[in-house]
Each structure stands twice: as C-alpha cells, then as structure tokens.
Length: 326
DNA sequence: AAAGTCTGCAACCGCTTTCTT
DNA sequence: CAAGAAAGCGGTTGCAGACTT
Image 1 (cartoon, rainbow, N blue to C red):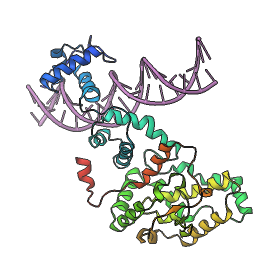
Image 2: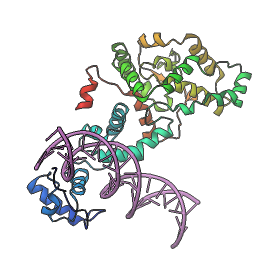
Image 3: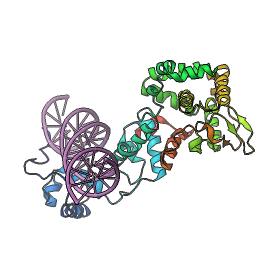
Image 4: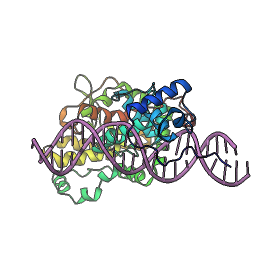
C-alpha cells in the first residue's frame, strides 16, 4: 500500500495567499522547518493543501529569495544556460542564487523570449530564425532586380545556403552538439578568447559590421562574419539576412561595401579554413555607422542582450554531463 | 474619464519521478 | 515488488495594475 492522501481537497482554499496565511506558514516553518507538506497545513492551521503550501514557501516566502528586477548578469546567465539546457528551469534556478524556477520561467516568457523574437532569434534554438531567410522571396523580390541592375550577383553566399539548410534539417540537439563541439574545440577556444578580447562583440549597433577597422580607421579584417564562424556557426545565416535587409531597406546602401563582402564570401569562404584559423585581434573598433544592421531603435538592454548571446563561452574544463547532473 | 488591451507574475494544473508502505 | 501518494517540474491560467485609445 502507498501513503494515505495528503489532504482532502474538498473545502480547501485556493487562490492568492493572505498575509495571515503567510504568517501562519512562516511561523510554523520557523519552528518546525520546511518539509512534511502532507501534515503541515493541518498543523499550521491552514485551509490549504500541502502542495499549495510548498509552492508558497519555495516561490515566495523562503528567506533566501532575491526579489526585484533581474540584473544584467543574471539575464545573461539565464540566456546562456537556456541555450544549453533548454526549459530546465529548476536546473537554471539552481545556478542563480536567490531566484526560483518559477520566477526565471516567468521572466523568460515575459521578457527574454519576446526580446529574442523581436531581434529575429529563435528562443528555442538560440539561432537566427531561418524562416526569416525566405530565399524564394528574395529571388522573386524587386530587390533582387534592383541588385541585378547594380550588378550584385552574389547576394547570398552559396556556403551560407548550404549551412542554413544544414541547420534547418538538424534537430535542436544536433545544433547543441555542434555548438558544444565548436565551443570545446581547443583551437576554437583560442579563437573565442581572442574574440572576447576584441571590442567587436560588445559594439551593439555595429554587430553585423562586415569589416573591422583599427583605431586609426584602417581596415584590418574584412568580413568579420566568416571569422566569427567558430564562435557562432549561425552568424553566417544572419549575414545573408544582412545583405538582404540592407539592400531592401536602404537603396543608397554602399554598393562597394556589398560587393566587397559578397565577393569575399563567395570566392574565399571556406568552412574548414575558418574553423582552423585563429584570428589575430588587436583592439578593434567597428566600421562607420553606414553598415549598421541591428535595429537601432531597440533599447539599450535589448541590444546588449542580443549581442551577449553570441559571447557565450564554455570554459575548457567544462564537463557537460557533470553540468547537467548537478 | 471610461472602456479596451496589454503586461507581469503568483498560483494552479497535470504529468513524471521519487519515495513510502 | 507493487501500489499509490508526495514531491518535483514545466506549462498554463487568471487577475491586478499599467497603458492605450
């Protein structure tokens, strides 16, 4: 035989807790400690079921709960952990002291998820949304005709197409494994660390700038998207998006800029070489504002969050199994 | 000022896992 | 070992307050 029922649900109160109920629960737990939720309501003089008491305690009354707005660091942590763990709210909460799984889940659904969607990021895969890469619409669009007139033959890099197809056909887990592989590859680690040392990734509105210039204004790295590939293999998909958006939204977009980058990507792009080529990186500053791509109307925190996603780095000592099982 | 809509969050629901008898 | 309740967890709902029309 199993246990006896924890409570008779008939006649038990539901809905928001009153101050009086909170006080009763708090006083009881201060004396007897949390746990034994089956008998707690009766002993504490509460007309609630044990489950309701447990939730009230774990989500609201616990003294170690941190209340108030999430900090930037906490938000970053949530995004980073979610990219690896998915909707494992309790596991994420275990790594954010003072925050409950419920609170994190709510914050994700009401803030972060919407923000990612607005920025064209799939909140499930943490990749740019491939449905925004509607290539048939590109091919049929007036923008393409315009680009033909401008002699822009390579709006979308064939390598990008292949990679986008690969991503679209792979499962989320596959993406994660690829992502983890890239993160944990020692060569890539070096590359990541170098990228971390640049200012490039933190320059929000310049994030998709195709070239980098040094502090003297000289171009030191052309087409940084391909250089960033090991750090985030999905960025290339965004690059084609960039060209499309720029071509369609701004007819005065610098033709030479597009041509340079399209030629560069179509002629020189090589997946393997990019993966194995560390990037030499002095302190970079982004190109001028004419190559801005990220929506400049976004709020500061929106843009920071968007960029921070791409900075996620897993330490060399990272053990995925240990991480999940902890 | 009032009605409608949106937003954030506490609490509930229901399924799965763990534990007790 | 099996049965069944407790505990854990993620998804969903309902409501109060904020915002918009």
